[in-house]
Amino acid sequence: MRRKLGIVAGLVEGRGLANPRRRPSSGVAAQMALRQGIGTGKVRAMEGSFLPMADGDSFIPGPATERRFRDALGLFATGVTVVTTRGARGPVGITANSFASLSLDPPLVLWSPARASRRFAAFASAQHYAIHVLGEEQFALGRHFAREGLDFDLPGVACNPEGVPLLTECLARFECRRHAVHDGGDHAIVVGEVLRAAAREGTPLVFSAGHYGRFTPR
Image 1 (cartoon, rainbow, N blue to C red):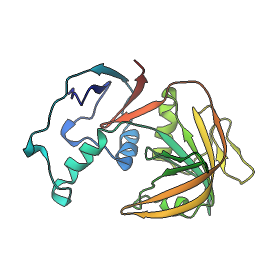
Image 2 (image 1 turned 180 degrees about the vertical axis):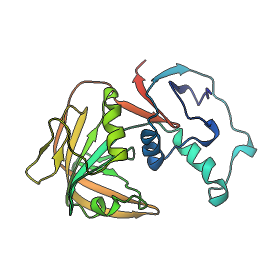
Image 3 (image 1 turned 30 degrees about the horizontal axis):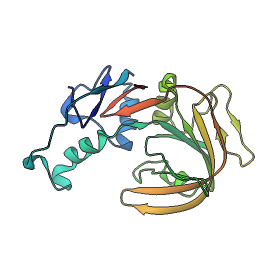
């Protein structure tokens, strides 16, 4: 299904979900799609006309409209990250698409782990962690940490001075120290001060409306 939104419409060309009416579209849903092995496609931008919403299209978010609310949120395309830390049982990783920049001075970033995750406690209490931005070719790495958070039997994994496991060949990496943790309903808002950063050239892996793909600039 192609939906034109505003002046630019983001279209994902690739394999979709079996039932398009029940597309995962939140941070947790992104992990669900990875666990199911949904393939990547190509996200491209194209010109479209503005389509005004009818009054009947608006709704009040709540238990009865949870699916519609998730689908609406899922129309905001994001990148895909893997966040790592060292927990009580050793290294822990999780795939997340809730990453965002927050401040340049001081250098702050944030992300939002779900309270329902079995790995929530490790990240909500972590004093140090690393956020890895995935490139388009790293779909398998994101799927790995969506399915298994304790398996770091991967090539090139090393630990930084704070003991946080670092993944190699990612598009960008931000090594963080805990700055603040705020309540975010069924998620927590974890703010980190960036101690060290690294980046390379490349194209990011993109998640939108239950699909993974790549971004093609105009």
